[in-house]
Image 1 (cartoon, rainbow, N blue to C red):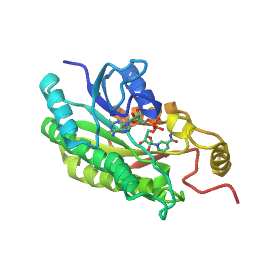
Image 2 (spheres, protein in one colour):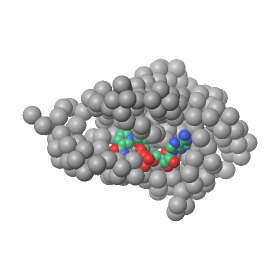
Image 3 (cartoon, rainbow, N blue to C red):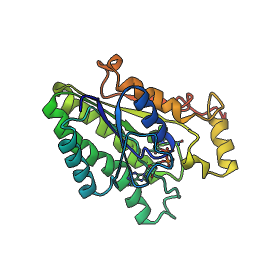
Length: 239
Ligand SMILES: NC(=O)c1ccc[n+]([C@@H]2O[C@H](COP(=O)([O-])OP(=O)(O)OC[C@H]3O[C@@H](n4cnc5c(N)ncnc54)[C@H](O)[C@@H]3O)[C@@H](O)[C@H]2O)c1
């Protein structure tokens, strides 16, 4: 297939869905890899894949290699939260979040890197979170996973740079998705109040940043963490 091939994990809803739709607009053939099938299938293809399961990840890339022979873009977007203060957090919730968010991203990068290194081109964008900075109580598991993604992104940029592969991360702030729609009104109010721009971001805000990072316009950018968070990573405006 001549079309550029991209994979978006967690592309069935929320930010991932918006990224998948943007990549289609950018001319990519998009394969959504998710545990849930998209409700409305605007993506070009869907593969059922639990990114925390190495067999699923290996079989996804085996299929891609066989069917298309190359992969141009990987967006590691799938992620979950299981918030709690550390003294109340079940160990299983730590394992689950780190397994999906960090280990899943690592395994996807590992299999993609094999193909991209061989073909001497590729772009990987990992979705971290503004929370990687460690300023959310109750998110010790999530923060560990998202800070891990930052470290992973920087090391992979070093390892893959000479093979023509760019690896960057986007760190979203508060974005209106099914994930945040589960937060209480009180928590949402507090989060918005702390935000310099006093608003909630849209999934498209993240998709636009990803679109730039996979384009030719960003060819000299690698190992970077782009915060798309209405300024929240600068500090809180509560005080
Ligand atoms: N929404 C926000 O405010 C916000 C802020 C910062 C970072 N993020 C990050 O952005 C990413 C997307 O978040 P969202 O708000 O769109 O979440 P969401 O819950 O709306 O969507 C997540 C998608 O990932 C899929 N998924 C979950 N576990 C999976 C697994 N093991 N394997 C494959 N797919 C899996 C889900 O089925 C779903 O389609 C996540 O990594 C999240 O941590 C979100």
